[in-house]
Length: 142
Image 1 (cartoon, rainbow, N blue to C red):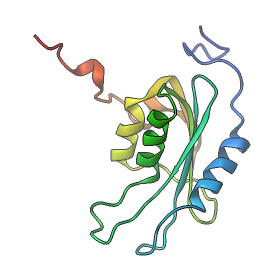
Image 2 (tube, rainbow, N blue to C red):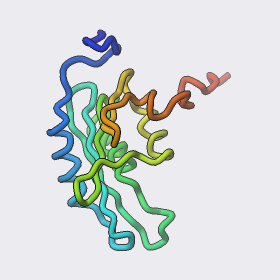
Image 3 (cartoon, helix red, strand yellow):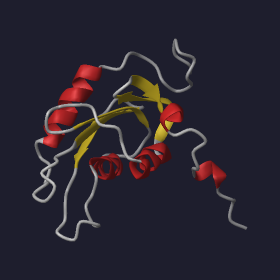
Image 4 (tube, rainbow, N blue to C red):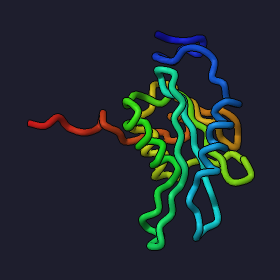
């Protein structure tokens, strides 16, 4: 059902301060001994849950998990669903934009009209990852 913005499946107002606080709390649990760059992310699911994740580094660097990866894992560990709103912060609480890989991860589980807090204000998933490739682009198995 559309809300005031006309986006299907999203209703009500997002409490961005609550999402910011959840992202900051997640960031405080980050494991970042190598980069010294802790990151926390939080999202609101379509069914009203708040999930979060933090980055978890690894000595081999390439195996480091971004906060968005942990968040998507948390989404599935807590019942799955779709993401309605997203917020990501660094150690100072400043807004961070997900990298391209993480935008793709978020796209896989976004609700239509999903909003992301960006350094330029609130934008939709489609604005931060236009013309994205997703499950809808895969052929049905024969």
